[in-house]
Image (cartoon, rainbow, N blue to C red; front, side, top):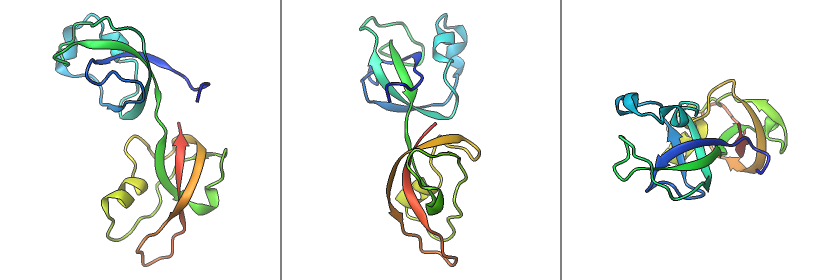
Length: 150
């Protein structure tokens, strides 16, 4: 993961811990008047990020986070998803396509079939292949749980 692209951003002091993950949801109305907003808004909306380094402990004023914000380095976080078993090859680069997960799904299976922060057509590398995903479906579907890197 050392070769992944890092970005610099600001995050609330309570969340600023190495390994912490968050979804970037974009600008809030409170951000309009902030002189540091360009630093925060350099992330891609709707993506999951992982903090890899807290730069220093100098707290910046923030209109969103009541205890201020710290400067951090982030990477796009790996995403756990279910994909067609035939495409589940470690190291392969794929264009993500959500599987056809028909029927009643428990929360865990739903999150695997429709992971937050991943869109159809995203170019991903399969970092890890895990176990098979069992679906109660009318049509037989063979899925594997994988870790994807964007």
